[in-house]
Length: 109
Image 1: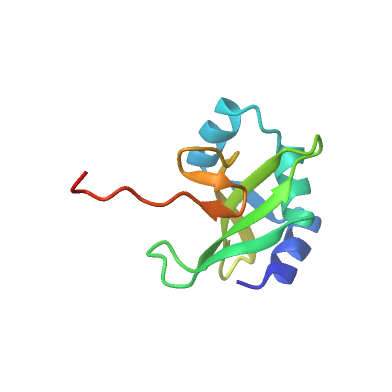
Image 2: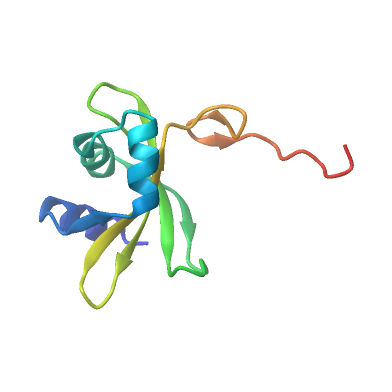
């Protein structure tokens, strides 16, 4: 994913949030400004070129008040618009820290 392009589109206000992202945003008290700030100061954490929804990625940034924030997004073509698929604060049990996933438990446990 071209993060420079993502940031340029967000700066141009060419983005929208999915219904799922809105639900998650409200559940975790994340503002639209938090999402924009996180994308603009963020970095690519994981790239998903083979995502069934289309090439997407996970970005890590920080909110206006310094909380780590994960944003999963894609660029919709041909309209050239960022679709924010979901947002969340990375926490246990899925994340050890904002950059490291927790090990998956074996299905035999």
